[in-house]
Amino acid sequence: MARRQLHKLSAKEAETISTPGYHSDGGGLYLAVGTGGARSWLFIYKERGTGKRKELGLGSAARKGGVSLGDARKRAEGFRGLLHEGKDPAAIRKAGANAGITFGEYADAFLESIKAGFKGRNTHRDWKRELEVHAKSLRGKALADITTNDVLAVISPLWLTTNRTARETRSRIERVLDAADSNGLRSGRNPAEWKALKPLLPKAKKSKRHHKAAPYKDVPAIVAALRTKHDGADTAVNRAAEFIILTAVRTGEARFMRAREINFKDALWTVPPERMKTEDHPEGKPHEVPLCARAVAILRAVMPKDLEPDAYVFAGRGSRDHKKPLGPNAVLHALQKVYPAMTAHGCRSSFRDWAGDETHFPREVAEMALAHKVGDEVERAYRRGTALKKRRELMEAWGRYVEGESNVLKLAAAG
Image 1 (cartoon, rainbow, N blue to C red):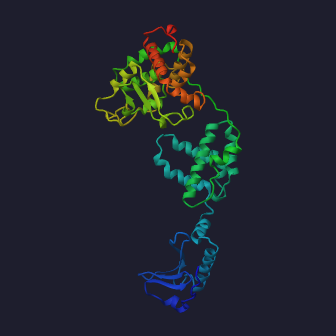
Image 2 (image 1 turned 135 degrees about the vertical axis):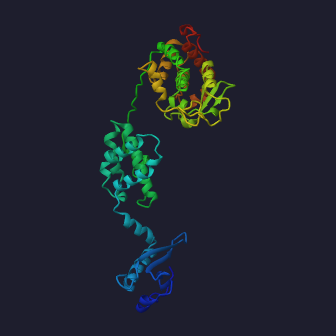
Image 3 (image 1 turned 30 degrees about the vertical axis):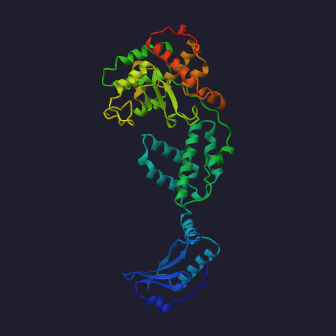
């Protein structure tokens, strides 16, 4: 910073100048006089690297009770010293002003600011529980002082017992700290970042959730019961439940199916990668679902001829324009009305048991029909080109079984 003339203003001038504008005392110190007579001290400088003009208020310059010329000069001198050291006075001041803000204070305010975007009714409750209960030890700590070890102390007790809760809590702590960084309340590496914590945590065993499933021998009767309801007010949801059984897909993949995903000519449904479960389908590629004749018939029955490409195939209740999908529990309730022990995910288990017990199709074909990860990357690439034909044969056989039209024990082996 080039040396400039300092102390341009006399004490009397500092008290009596009334002309509106900025009056320099030198070295970045200015007396600002407003059109209404308001007077204040400013330190003005250019940010290193960008040349951006910045102003820092040093207090009122009122004749009574204001900051004196001498005190203003001392404060300006301190800022000039910071600039000489390559530091930004505004950033230093902001950090000092925010040094006392705690994680709890900021987390509560942040949660309040984002809750309007939550879709599920329980999302706000889950956030609140994890930030108040699980992250309790962080709440009293200043944002800038939180370390990886502090976050580790929150996550470790949950990691091997309730791993899903541990992962969600870590993710939400990370998001809070990211927001604090964006607001200039902390800086540096986020201590809740997964890369920072992963080396410090033991490998957690994946817990397998067992979904209620009907014995596959009961599935034809379940489908028959669903069909008796097709003429009622809940036509769409019962047809959706039957479609999910016939295709062995996850409920979310069918609920959010859009018209443009269906290829009637090839009897093929292409599920985009963002709707696939990444743990089982990690390649980030679409999943092709071959459709048996009955599955195609269901789609034609629920889709108006003029349906827009982005419209949902299975519309939610009251959504005549198909702009809203079925509710998250609609299919589950439809299934349990005809078979109380059944779940939507259990339909996949019924299909897999049938394929393993009653057909000669290779295990890999059945697993790929469920969009499960099979083999290593090389093997999956090799199978990708040949498996669709075999999967179509498998799904058509399943469709015939569900219809009660074939004795599956006598199905020919798949080539």
